[in-house]
Image 1 (cartoon, rainbow, N blue to C red):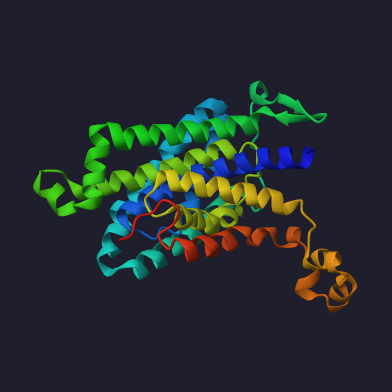
Image 2 (cartoon, rainbow, N blue to C red):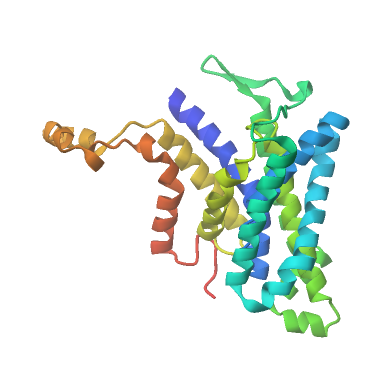
Length: 313
């Protein structure tokens, strides 16, 4: 029971973190069709900016200002780089953002070094939320989940209940009609890209105080974020949240499971034979926990090629 509850809690919080990073990419990828391979780098920049600002001012200033700075960088990237290659198709966008990811990583190493920085949560948030099976559960994990949930609700309200959301959805589905009605569609796209980068920066600013802030943090989440967007369905925030939670929970449980096919063969008396063969038969689930997001993506795409909440295009 302890393993079940603890793994579920950790999986939900990790899933909410994935949503914070993937929400911006859901908007960018789903609306603009831009293959932004550098999106996880905005997450990394948010953590480092928040670390710097928290050292100069305090944690809360860093939490508020870091996403704005990352959003400005995103606006500049879209305006002066991506807009110039958008006409040439996805391959050029992918190569450009792939190069940007390396540039951001090297710049971080140049200014902050190759090792993790000492970015910590404030003392006011460093306490136990509750005690479970004799172990204190950090409140900051709950704080991460709360910020992600607030982000999800805010985005839903913004996109579905405000004039800004109507313009954004109109520019997504019928850009020529939106342009004919007097809306500046390139400006809308630039704003969406900047907002998506800012959301990733907020995720980095929040998570960087709990998880290690290092130059490899973008690489650790970069591919998984794309998996979340694909599994959830392009452009679907609800699908992105659902996919994030599924991946987080599956990965959390997989880390603690030592099950293998050899153990299953024990039920029919063939366990010894399976262990003598070795290979895949003796490989435990925990040893392949890193592959769980991709296995989930494979299963979902076989059943629903458009993703969990995606629509056929």
